[in-house]
Length: 104
Figure 1 (cartoon, rainbow, N blue to C red):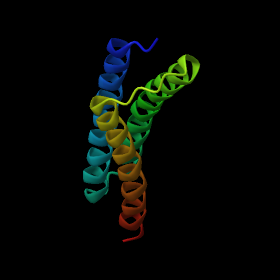
Figure 2 (cartoon, rainbow, N blue to C red):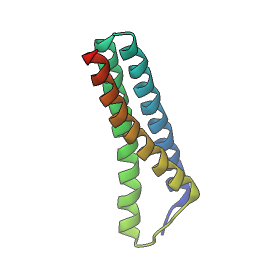
Figure 3 (tube, rainbow, N blue to C red):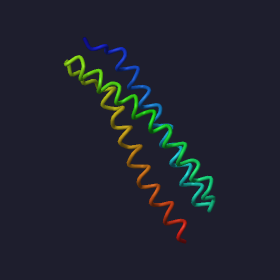
Figure 4 (spheres, rainbow, N blue to C red):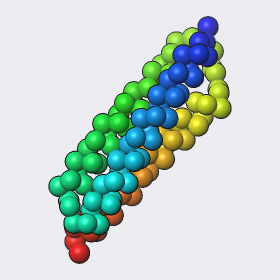
C-alpha cells in the first residue's frame, strides 16, 4: 500500500535539496562574474551535492512505488520533480556561462 505521508515527506526533501542546489548554482554564477572562479567551482560542487541528495529522494519514491505496484501521483511530488528538473537545467546553463566568463 502506498504511504502518502512518506511520499509527501520525500517530496518536501526533494524540493528543499533542489532549491538549495539552485541557490548554490546562482551564487556560483555571481562569483564567476566577479572572476572568483575557484569559489564559483566550490559553489557548483556544493550545489551538485545537494542535487544528488534530491535525486536520491526521488529515486527512493520511484523504487517504493514500483515495489507496491500502486502508482501514486500527487501534486506535491509533481512539483518536486519539476524543481529537480529545474535544478538540473540551471546547473547545465550556469556551467556553460561560467566557461564563457573564464574565456573573457
